[in-house]
Image 1 (cartoon, rainbow over the protein chains, first blue to last red):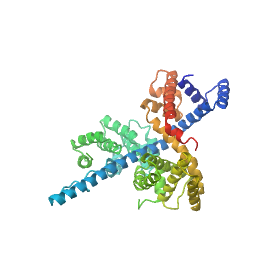
Image 2 (cartoon, chains in turn cyan, yellow):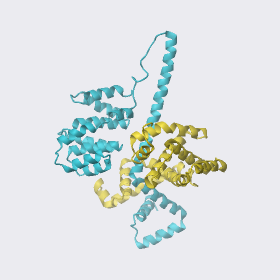
Image 3 (cartoon, rainbow over the protein chains, first blue to last red):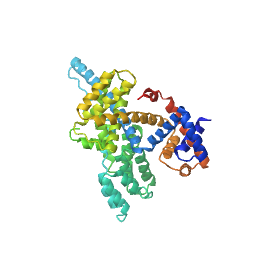
Image 4 (cartoon, rainbow over the protein chains, first blue to last red):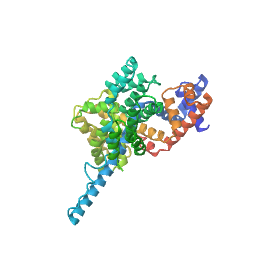
Length: 245
Length: 197
């Protein structure tokens, strides 16, 4: 039996799709063949793991956080080394100062994201711009304000042509640290190119990339924002100045 | 962490709050790593044990409504220590006496239930982490397909979503992806390491 046939056979058993005769054969095999039983258990466990979206997301978040803390550690070590070198230079040369270290230095991308992610200001724009009669948007914003982001996403999901809904779905996904889905929603708003939320979507899209540590993509979008006359111009400039080299 | 309560930390873990998780990592990982390295473990061991410890706490909070009346750091450290010693024991790198004395210490603190739950959950979480690590190595198409299957979508729905030519094709594609994932997992030496746990 080819490996994938055996896999499919087990999958059909787990799906409850085996017919009576097949099921009987399957159970016999399960009893007499420990290796087969082990594979069945493994496949079942894998399905359980993949179906638990919350846990998958948490593990992903833990990995991302670990990488971030590691990077920060390297940056700190590097700063200490520079500090040591500067001290030696100052002792030798006397009075030589360099403003490399300390608060004026670069920040890590995740800290920049956290400091700049503030969608609350956008709330008023959305409430004002979207038809107030749209009860779903109102309910979703209420769910969002109550920190029930999954509920907000569920309410907004059917509103695929409503750009306010897309913007708020994006914010909700950001709150859940699901940046891939947040990016998808902001892209829809930007690609629509005919709504009031493009500036917010662009700025938050850049923040999503920062949270994912994708400096290249974030910088590209931020430079694009700097070249336009919007309320985000200054913020974008400040972030660019803070982004690590 | 001065202004964040234990309850906020536990809820933050269950809700995957990136801010809380970042803070927890920043504050407590160093302590766990230092301990594991002092016991002959490596950086990678510390990372795995710490993450499994958080997942154990997630499970305990979500399904058993865990309440911590002490300091969160002490609790997390005890869970991680328990996981690590249990693994050393499984690898036969540790004398039973050391493990027993830890259990005695935890019992003294009234954490008997936690000991039992940690033992049950930590190996499950260890295996789940290996499944996920290998799952992430797959192509995007396979990942989406397997995720949809695991979430209970019918083959008919999957065929429509992917725009595949037939349900038969979806079955075949799904089997190939799953077989590939099974192969990766079966080849992962980490999976066999603690088979006796």
